[in-house]
Amino acid sequence: MNIVSSVVEVRAQVKKWRSQGLSVGLVPTMGYLHEGHRSLILRAVAENDRVVVSDFVNPIQFGPSEDLESYPRDIEADALLCEGAGAHLVFHPAPEDMYAPDFCTYVDMKELTEGLCGRTRPTHFRGVCTVVSKLFHIVAPDRAYFGQKDAQQLAVIRRMVRDLDFDIEIVGCPIVREEDGLAKSSRNTYLNAEERRAAVVLSRAVKLGRSLMENGERKASVVLAAMRELIEGEPLARIDYVEMVDAVSMRPVDEAHGSVLCAMAVYVGKTRLIDNFIFEG
Ligand code: PAF
Image 1 (spheres, helix red, strand yellow):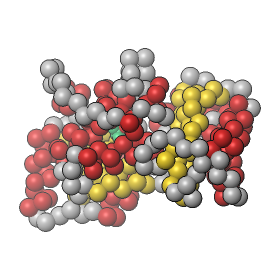
Image 2 (spheres, rainbow, N blue to C red):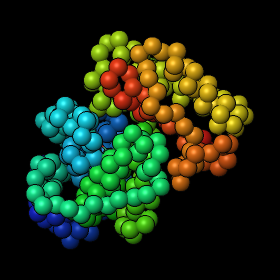
Image 3 (cartoon, rainbow, N blue to C red):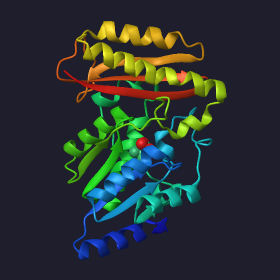
């Protein structure tokens, strides 16, 4: 497995694979890889001849008061995980390899990006769409793999691919959880022991919401009130949002019909965590 930092090297490698008739999968990540990322890489390896993992903390998707500087990084451990999972190439650019000093072209999306995480992170999805578009152009994969934990991101990327005619299949992969239910996330490392214990309230709320819906409840107000009440019972937790939206349009719904997403962002101490479930009504 190779680790490269320049766009030219990625393109040369992919060109070679293409000339041999090989298919290519891409797993975009910001590094500090965990079991969730490993599950994406394993799926990509099972479905493609060659797999590229991008490992890049993308500065333009962080707001001015967010955790860009402190975001955890460990490229050596990431390389070991990628190799163990069967990836063929890690693309680990420096910010200046991705963004020229006079960079000024962005991919922006309306509507789907305005609610949920977009409300507290107004420039986040512009950064995500821009970097993912760049990665799609650089690697030109057949398929790209994203986790369902970032449900809004997955919906936004699917829409971007449709709207901008990227010829790439987007594969959404299930949330991977710790034994106690906490969704795996690189940001879990910010939690101290007490916060780590409290953070399980997110997955407990997911479980509660899902079970209410499985038992026939369809009113968003009822499901969300129960989830909020549970979270508010945890003194270290502070709700950013708990919402039910249409799983494709990301528009809020009053009643669950078709495919809906129940998503939440909750601060545990200073750490903002997300979790969600999809319900097919
Ligand atoms: O989900 C992430 O880790 C990032 O948002 C992504 C898709 C790699 C873009 O930087």
